[in-house]
Image (cartoon, rainbow, N blue to C red):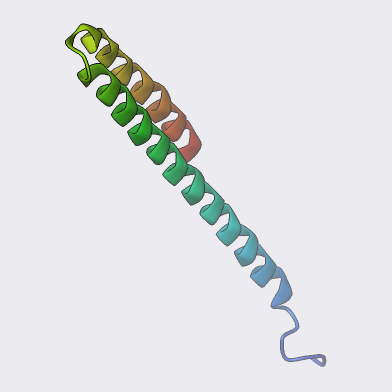
Length: 77
């Protein structure tokens, strides 16, 4: 029962720190994916709306949103 008062706490604290870093990493990646999706959608929409002849480019938005959404969902699991 001797030793320092903090003996026995290093393992759980190290595990907590590692889990917290993993949560922060996943959160950062999720925010980056959301930002990429919004930027892509806005850029394509702006490009397509600039001229009536480019309205066909709006088809890219659902496709890119699906791809990035699938990536986001895969990251959650």
